Image 1 (cartoon, rainbow, N blue to C red):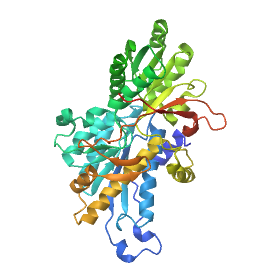
Image 2 (tube, helix red, strand yellow):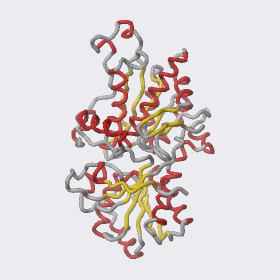
Image 3 (tube, one colour):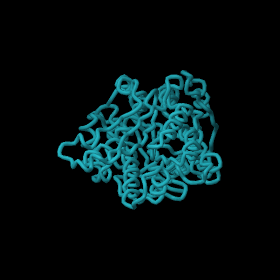
Image 4 (tube, rainbow, N blue to C red):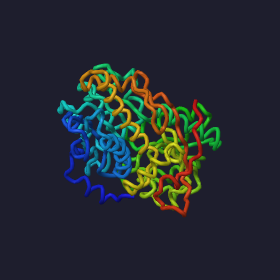
Length: 417
């Protein structure tokens, strides 16, 4: 797996990846080389706590784009990728203000017809109104807060009305509640303490989990918010220990989650611990380490695909190309890029110009065969598949401790409400 130093080195001073022109590929017809390139953006947090997981998503996206360019492009048009980092050292993770700045830069370039990203919902909330005003569609492989695509909140997140925020994952309207169902129906949890990290994703998924847990008859003993920049959570954990819940549920991402898991192992080692997709990934495994990570339950807002036969060759190609083990969000990122490429191709074949508006319209009507299955969207941009997958960290000493495929044991699909 790549290290944080590699990430910093690879991205220092880099804002744009301009892929090789079609003429670079030996033997390509000269007529094809004359076709204009088409620009798309990639916006992910490569600085701070989210960097490693973002690299895996970016590499998944680039697998699809590189494959398309190597085959001559989309109908002869090479795809040029503009990459922006939405993480900052000040935030120590994703930074909504930086995501907004990046989106304004993309919107200011009339050649950019679509974006892929963001990773985090806090970014998405900052980006979506800007995308709407620019009529610039994005597709996220991992952002799950339901507010962004909620039609009741369209005035805030898509003021021009049309859907611009598409997803290849389901939302926390399903991820949080379905994990509550799993804890109630399968783990037989009777009481839980709920934590969040104050971010848009963490608060949203903790809220939806807590609401469903109460419906399922689980007694919620309390709720606290963790400051991601604080180092010590032992006061809260000691309070939880005194209440002796059956389980703790954490809504949030790695910056707070890593510290929580390390300290929880010391203070409340025997209490069941669970979270959303913020505790699924290389950042969590490497940051927490074993034995502290052992036993944590996590969900993914997508089907579990990396161990399916349909993805076997792709996983091998990914590992050979990037010397890294992909996770399911590497695949949802790859599939997100496939949707954008398919949309561009359908616009070209329709005879219409490849504009933001036309690409957005094509994304709205997408019905693309991908590694995770058929991807299509409702009127708000949400994927129609509502699958939530459940995992448990179970150490397999035959593989590296940060091997996502082998250290997260797939349990199954979470029960839907």
